[in-house]
Amino acid sequence: MNRVGVAIPVPHPLPVQDYIEAAKRAEAAGYESVWIPEVAGPDATSLAAAIAVETKRVRLGTGIISVFTRHPTLTAITAATLSGLSQGRFVLGLGVSSPTIVQEWQGIPFTHPLARTREYVEIVRQVVAGGKVVCDGKIFHIRNYRAAMVMEQSRVPIYLAALRPPMLRLAGEIADGVILNWVPAERVPQLIREVEAGAQKAGRSLSDIDLTCLVRVCLDEAEDRVRAWLRRELAGYTIVELYNRYFTALGFDEEAQSVLAAWQRGDRAGATAQVSERMLKALAAFGGAEACRKRIAEFHAAGVNMVIAFPFSAEAQPRDSLLHTITALLA
Image (cartoon, rainbow, N blue to C red):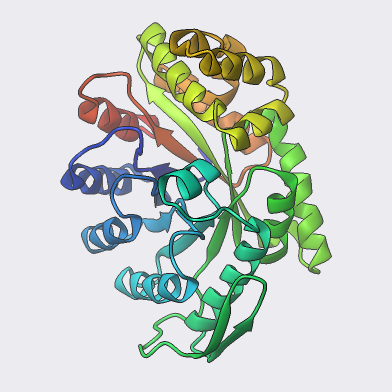
């Protein structure tokens, strides 16, 4: 199997020690990297620090933290600290998140996401390089900031989460890697072309950019139960305007509109039921181990350098099921 990373699961709240155990098992199983998302669960950077001291080989990435919720100078010194703590294994995964999380949950205006991301990446790189930061941009205004710490690595890889063409092109232009999400394998080449267009604009090659993709994975033969869980998860994303437009652009326009219409009527069960079998099979890998491995191979064949398996479970007590998916997928 080609390069495979694993994401510590966000949809299943677990004690912090269980996340650390999952990361240790991932390293033992042969995963290339562990990616730690941040939404409303544990702080990704604190968890990355804990995992860094409990592992030796596996790369560690935030997958992702939002450019709206932390100042870039703070993110830069955090990234530099984690890079030193992990002896160069840390990858900074950034993204804009969504208006729901940024604006509704945290009260931060969701404005100018592309300009913010571009300036954010540049500021982080300047800080980590040890230089004096001067920025008079559209979003950030910084005068003569310099980190007062030893930079053990002069550069930390930065990956950008991207869904739509403008962010995909920006990732191709400025990032070390791109993180795709909720995408069918057959659509991957289309998204890669957008990344390549951004790379060419900056005089770069597509080979300069690590193309990664999050894929929901569940090794569970009780597929009806898994489908029910996955339908609920996808419905929750589909009612968010940003994802509704994204799924529509991917060709799931009928599902996107039907889910949203039912949800707006207050019919939660009806909204979940509108997530089609076609959508489930295109956007996740579930069933037996061989079926899941075959599904992951389709993403590699489509041009993804590394699949980031995102384990999920349909169990009421998900810990053992999640650990099973992590350990058995690469067995």
